[in-house]
Length: 60
Image 1 (cartoon, rainbow, N blue to C red):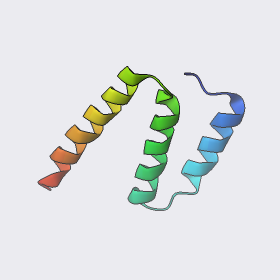
Image 2: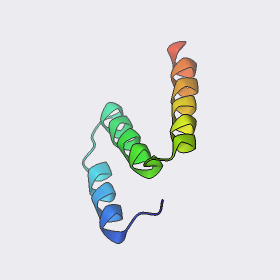
Image 3: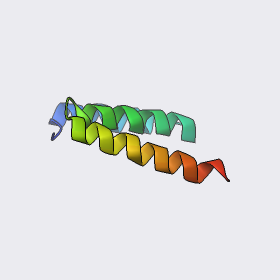
Image 4: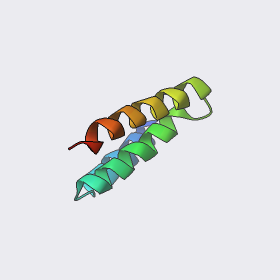
């Protein structure tokens, strides 16, 4: 789902306001949920991606 110019502006401002990695992670996850919308396949991809990333980081 493409973003409208207003949505792009909102997300740019939200990312500019983040000051830490946890803040950026939360903003990126929210953006991903926005982009996935009601698309079940996109949601499944997001869950797999986050699971793989989390498992990779668990050992560091």
